[in-house]
Image (cartoon, rainbow, N blue to C red; front, side, top):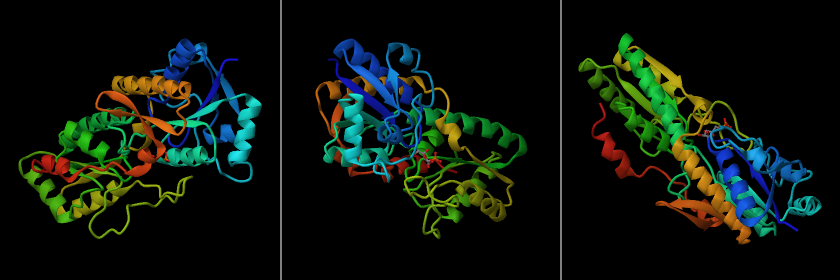
Length: 344
Ligand code: F6P
């Protein structure tokens, strides 16, 4: 009988998830003769056996579609009352599923590691627009988010120029400044503020004033996790998410009036938000996601349980859940200093 594997997408969505699903199903069917199903809404579908068949006809034309056809959630596999490995083993046995492919970020990788240690056949694919997983050079979704943020900077600059205003754009990234750094460089921002590198309000205002004195309209890009020196924690006023992490967002709205008060320059804030996660993935992300999908079909064919795929240079390699979880990838100081010298 053909081996049968189940795919789930968990945590925040990310452009490229559908391309991973397509890559895995196509290679799994074509090369290995495997069958695939999808678990609906992340771990929820695994815990409650809520599945959909995935074959060639279902995944055709999917690589340019944003979001995830499987749905996602922040429901955990150990959630009471029905979660946990014994229940999941029964669900998999009843559905005739030989292994699970979990596509997700850090929360998903830690849950997968725990399930693997509890005897579930499981492998993973890293995903996040934040690009903050050290074990892979890039995650799919990041490139698309950077493109979207760069376009936002381009658009804000024209309106900022018309009104001679300072424009502050806030981008996502949680505790990492990758989206801010890359989009800020691409969009020619006059200051880029990231969680890894504290900057004082005096310094930010000095950059802004310097730009204005040259007759230009200042463009500041700030990552949602940036803290001013007197802030103990990242700015968070929206409570906790499903994994009990503070929901970030809104630091641009704090910074804009401070800049305006201090410099006298009219300042506007834009919080880009989930637009960075929606819509069509970039070509780069489609390629990376398709390669990850195909590589994860090799993992299950090899019964390489407990492993994930990752990008090293141009190669797709295999890593363990432990490696994936070892270190968050933060922007190194030298990469920030390299561009900081031209701020202002
Ligand atoms: O991790 C991806 C991400 O988009 C972060 O950049 C952001 O802080 C968070 O997820 C937003 O999560 P939610 O979709 O739960 O609001």
